[in-house]
Length: 388
Ligand code: C5P
Image (cartoon, rainbow, N blue to C red; front, side, top):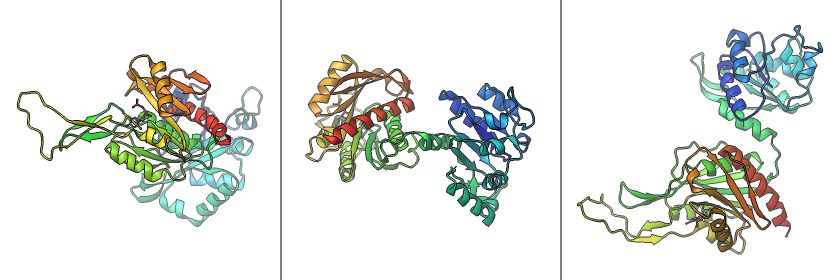
C-alpha cells in the first residue's frame, strides 16, 4: 500500500507505482487531501489499475475501510511523507484515512520523508524522526540536493528506484545476514593500444543484479566491476577495474573474510603480450597479434585451501548443460549457473543452476528477479556447505 501525502515529490510517486506494478506487485494507493493538491487520483488509479482511496468517511462494503485496508497488505509505504504527516504518525493522530490505517496495522511501515531543508533540520522534525525509528518505522532517506523551493540541502525524497530497492531490502528475508559476499561483474578490457581493446560482450546487468540481491539478502557486499554503463548498486562497495590482472588483484585483496565468491564477470581469456604505446596504424595488410592467456580468477580462488563458497557463471552457445557441468567439475565449484549465450546483453535471462544434486532450471525472468533466485539458492547451499 502506497500512502501519498502533500509534497511536490508526489509526482514521483506515480513512477513508484509504475515500477512496483511492473515487478508484479499489487499497489493500493491512499492519498491525503493535501496530496491531491499536487497530483490527481486518476493518475494513480490508471497506473495501479485499482481504485484510489482518500476519504475516511466514504467507506467500502464493510464500512470499516480505515481498519480493513491495511489488514491484507505486505507493507505500507508513505512516499512522500510530509513533515506534517510524520508529526501525525509520531503522535498517533488519526484524523484522515491514511493516518488511521497507519495506526490500525500490523505490517511494516516505511516512510520516505520529503520536505524543505529547514523543516527537515527543525528540532521538532528531528525528534519526530527519532521517535518513528524507535517505534520500528523504517525511514528511507531523505537525500540532499537541489530542492523544489530553490534551496539546496537535505530533505529531498530519495528517487523512486531507490525507494523500490530499499523497501525490498527491508522486507526480504535475510539468509545472508552477517555474511560477506564478493561479486565480479561486467567485462574486462585488455588494451591492444591506447584506443583499442579485446573485450567480451557483457553489460554487467547480471553481476550487478546478483550484488544487489545479495545485499537485499542481508550480506555485506563488495562488487568488483569491469567497465560498464550501469550505476553501482546502492549500499554496495564497488571497486572499478579494467583488465583481468586488475580484477584478479582486486579480488585477492578482498578475499580475506569473504564467505561467498560469485564470479559473474566475463573475463577476457587473452591479453596482448605487449600492448602498443602508440595507436596501431592500419596498413591494409593482415595484423598479427600475440596473445597471452589471462589468469582464471575463479579457478584460482576455488583452488585455494581457504577458498570461500565459490559460484561460477557460464555462457555457452551450444550443449549448454554438458559444457557447463564439465566446467563446474574442472573448476571444482559447488554451484555453477549456466545461461544461453544468446541472452547476453538482454534484460531477461533463463538460468540453470548446476550443483551436486543436479540441474535446477529457472523460468525466464528479468535479471533482477533471476538474480534473487540465484542468491536464494546460494544461501541454501552455503548453509549446508558451511556445516560440512
Ligand atoms: O571458463 P569460462 O570462462 O567459461 O568460465 C566462466 C566462469 O569463470 C565465470 O564465472 C567467470 O567469471 C570465470 N572466469 C574467471 N576468470 C577467467 C575466465 C573466467 O574468473 N579468466
